Image 1 (cartoon, rainbow, N blue to C red):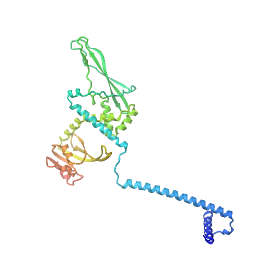
Image 2: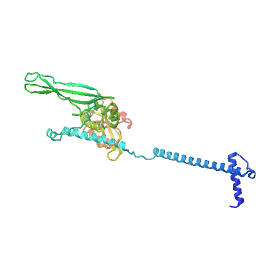
Image 3: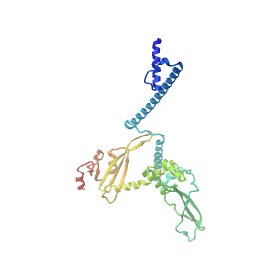
Image 4: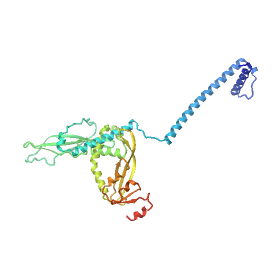
Length: 366
């Protein structure tokens, strides 16, 4: 580089440095500066440039971070999303499988003959003993009459003890059922009070505990793994698989009640029907697809208020026709085509006021 050009650049750089550092508006006379002053000036200038570079790097990093966050928020709000299930959510399917297996076992138990039951291998479940610190309520079961058929007085020779686990919200208690054994020395007769009926035969939960699990699961929307933790805080952590088996067994026992409620509903001449979508987990795929809950109820003017829910994997009209069966009457529904296939076979369509302007006139004819 020629000396004159180097000198001009050097003077311009020094003037800019002095202007930045000292707030000077006029170009200084470099000939009056000594070598030490020029070196100090250059050092200050290079420090300021380095600080500016660091500030620029930090600003660029902040801009990049904010740009990335804005892109994520835009994608979360506007882009298409498919609901993905993590490992914890996927475990919810385990409850459903255990419940279904328990329900199948209970149904098989009901249809098996005595010979088939006797031929089945007897499996004694391995249960953990109930904690001894839980409070016990003693319930004695004794025969109504302790007089033998031969006229002798029966003597108590022993007892059978079984324990049922009960639950008051926030506190576990144990019902200790004691069934005395009475025998006659003369004719060797043994009598004992029968075992009181249970929802789950030979199971430990009482009807109160089963009601608590079902209400918490279906009414309070508490999954079984959360109920397990709640019970653990109360003193006894019940395995989730056990809770799932209880739910499945109760479903079988409550089915006659659901059938009776449906039969009572279909005795009315005017019914309301509607369906609403729900997300259902597809077993093995860890994804959801749209299923439907069909609701059928009596009119607000009926003496008996009945509502029955029927779950179906789709919105096909065959589900409504299967539920209604041979029922004939007036059906209040919307304009969904799935209901129309049943009209004309003894079912009269009544459009609801939210979908048909002429519904006010139709209702006046009911």
